[in-house]
Image 1 (cartoon, rainbow, N blue to C red):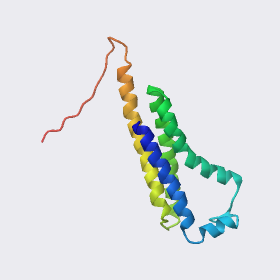
Image 2 (image 1 turned 90 degrees about the vertical axis):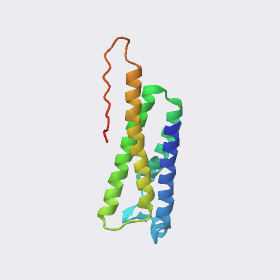
Image 3 (image 1 turned 90 degrees about the horizontal axis):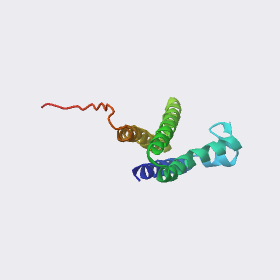
Length: 147
């Protein structure tokens, strides 16, 4: 359930970033004219934007129905993919030298995706320890801090 909630947070952040993007000066007028940031608006661009919004929502639903280890792997792959895309998008936006308002929510979505990836690694480790055959050697590493 926690993965579902985190995917919903990521999806809402990305949808919010898209809404804020269109409130920035002259963006809506460019979109209506068929051009976004100097590039012509194509069906491929529209499908990519729809996919970015739909991916976290689809993964939220999948995390409810995919069981155990497969759930952790699905969340790991989705978290790394969306988090990497978010870092790439943020880098390309910041490379232009201007900080846009929608970038903040996009970074929240990317950070949530990386959080999901990290929690998925923990879940994979937990599932691998639970599924070890009886009598097998389990290595557990613990860290202790001394004050």
